[in-house]
Image (cartoon, rainbow, N blue to C red; front, top):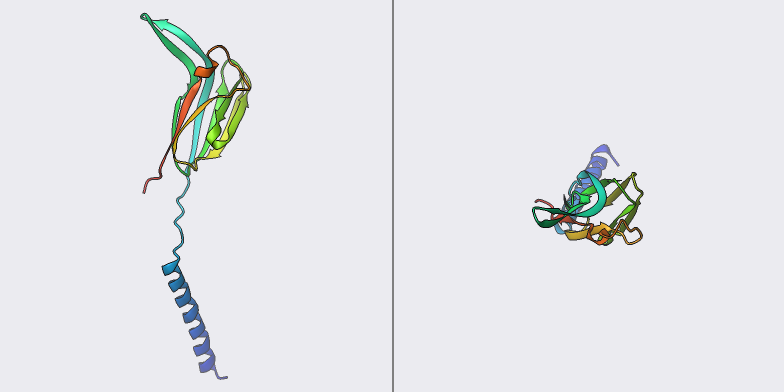
Length: 146
């Protein structure tokens, strides 16, 4: 086989491979992958207290912040400090139940892979007082921006 025929054969093979890949990608496009953001949120947990101000009853304490907003696909890190008692961070839709000893800081990491509004609370294995069941917050996971 002379050099011209070898070059032609190799060139034809490359052309066929590139053509095949082009046709394949036309009918089976690669799914776009959105870059995930790393979101870190510092939180505190404290006993909910009922206080009276100007003749009205108010709740103080609990989760701070009470509302967390992230985008679907975000890698979320919560750094949670218990200020006064044993608590736990309970987010059932994400299978999270993390114990937080009094005066300690724990880290909770997860991927926000479901859009929606999800309630988090102080878990049932701890009881941080008579107002334990008022210790609730919400995680809002928004659809990714296009």
